[in-house]
Length: 335
Image (cartoon, rainbow, N blue to C red; front, side, top):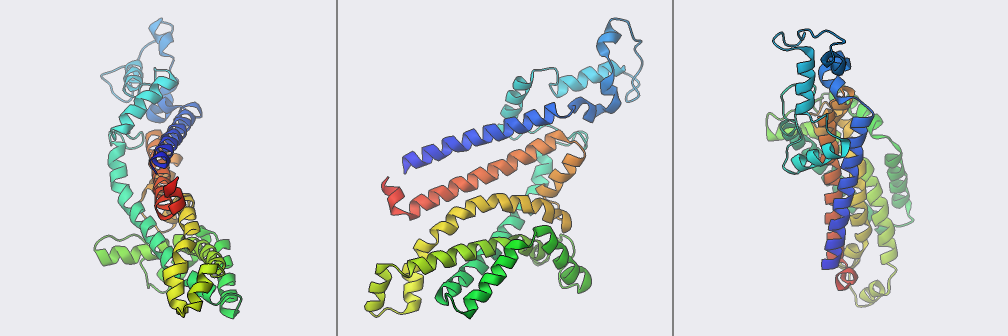
């Protein structure tokens, strides 16, 4: 088990380093951070000004300083004069301490403060979606296995395939129109004025995200349960007079959950990706919506921080899933 933990930890660190470096490089190579901060002023050739080839004028942003002084101060503040690799190392060191810099678009606002305000809504949405998914998938998977190859099982198969085929954005728009705008059963936007209001306002977006997950989990669990119920130990349990309910929940369900647990970590990526769209549809002030806005506004520090948080959440959840799988499977514990 110790070897598994050390191996997964090293992989976690390497993945995070790769993701953050590639993201940092893309932000700095594909765009001009200086232009995104001070606009056309970034195109001023201050070297030519220093040589006297171009006259120096007072800045339109600050009459007490020249344009080149503004450019120099911004470059120094954001370390834009440093080589790319050095800037990345400095940024990484600050990020480990929770300092992601300041937003380009919201002048002077720390990115960590923006994330602090946006993270709670996203975390609640994803937990809510997983709760809905597992609450639907486990009983329906058990029922589908119990009624395998009968009419009820075939109906569940059709419904689950349909849920898997419907895109999140399409389902979200339909649910928003029918249950919020048309009937008013649920609010059309995020409301955290009370616990009940928040739970109610998050139900539609959580169901939008959780329905596809539930369909995938249900299919996996049903298939594994059908296989497990054919094992010799199940036939032995029936020969001893145990009821089907006792066999299903005490002997067959636990080993059949392994594949669901494994996929749980992988599906986290789909959940995070889906939340980017769902938060936009239901006006949820979460990290996903903020990240989309930051991309549109070329707000590099917020984009980098958002990507880092999402990547960290993904690898940490998969790390936890690997440990849980190792704890549940005696063969992995023995190794």
